Every structure is written in structure tokens, then in C-alpha cells.
Length: 307
Image (cartoon, rainbow, N blue to C red; front, top):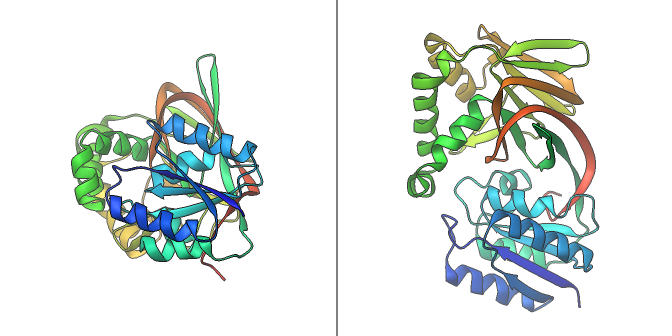
């Protein structure tokens, strides 16, 4: 009997004890299942990595995109498959992989024998002083504005879980209006023959960058191949309404003054002075002096509802 490990976040916005019991009951009918309750993000990654070493067939992340991100860190490059039970607010990865939104249906998808899909991730090498760390972004990553919005949103976890996209929009508006317009370009961004001085760099490598409620947000009208970078020189208050309108209505963000969109990016390199905030999959990764982001194809096995 195949072995599964379920790593759950009980404080995820849509998590309930009843739904967890239902998931465990459904999966235990066809698999040997173990439940793990990590005390931190690092413990979730460590547990996933240990499960992969032990030869577990799949590790199931039950929670929001943060839990998916942390579990994936332990599974990239292994033969163990990532399963998802969406229990967060936005659940971007689950939507992109056509994983059912209801926990019972998501559990049945995992329990149904089918070959996993292999997907790519963006591998980030982050440097702060003498310390270098590696992270893998599953659906998006960014430096500057969006990372500071994540930090601001995390200051009030209750509103984050209760109001979701509305809370992020309020956080973005606050950062965009109050603090970020005074930021001068301090990031040197490079990709192949392109370079720019910027305050923000975003990377999209899935169908969408993120969602605002049900509305998909994209950096370009073209699909990433393999990655698309948006480089923002400086945020001017007078341009914020146009940026928001273009993002929500699928108009070209590159049409806004001060924004460049680079297509067909395989590697992005950054140097920042002073350091810049960074996020991956909506999780703050702190501040960095330098970074490189490269596309790593077909390196993560996932259970997907896509045909």
C-alpha cells in the first residue's frame, strides 16, 4: 500500500478539524496515511524532505499557498509527489492545477490512481551579506513593491485570513500611496542583453501571476516562455490608478510609463543597494543584497486535475 503524509496548517482560513478528518478518512481507504502538524514553516519543509528520503509516494499540503510553498521546498528534485488540499484564502496553485476547491473532492483526486505531472519552478538563489540560500517559487516571485505588500499584509493575520484579497488590496494601496513613491531606483536588474535600474522586479511563470478574488492578474498579455519579468523603475502616485486598471482589465502593463515587461526570460539577476524585500508564492523571504532566478523545468511532481 502506497504511503502518504498529510502536512496541515490548522490556522489556514478555510481549515476545519472536520475537513481534516474527512481527508484522512478518504485517503486511508487506499493508502497508508500519516498526519503531521508542523510548528513552523521550516518544520513543514523538513518533514516533507524527510518523507521524500523515506520513499513516501506523496506529501499532501493541506492549507493555503504558504503551506504549498513550504512543502514544495522539500520535494523539488525528488521522486515524491506534491498533493494539495486547498484550505487557504486564494489557493493560487490549486486553481492553476485544477485541484477541486472542496476538500472532499481534492482528497478523492489524490486517492484516485493517476500518473503525476512534472512541472517547472523558479529557483531563487538569494544573497544577504555572506549568507546564500536557495528557494523554489511554485507560481510567482518578486522583489520590491509586492514583497513589501506581503510584509504589510502579514502584520494583521486576522484580516489576512478573514478578508483575503480585500486585505491585500488595502495593504497594497497603503504601501503604494504612503511609502513606496519616495523609493528611488536601487536595484540593478539584468537578463541577457537587457538591464534596468528599478525599485521592483516581478516574475511570472504560470498562466497567471496571482488572483484578485476571481480575477486573474497577469504581467503580460503573452503566456510566459518560460518566464516574464515586469520591471518598475519608480512608482509615481499619479500612475497607481492606471496600473490597477490595466492589471484588473488585462490591458498591457507595459503601456504604463516607467514599466518594462521582458518576455522569454530564462534567468534574472539582481543587485540591490540598499537591500530589497523578496517574496515567493506570497511568502516573505526577508531582505537580500543580490539574487538570481532561473527556470528549472519539470523538477516538481504534482497531483493535478488537468487532463
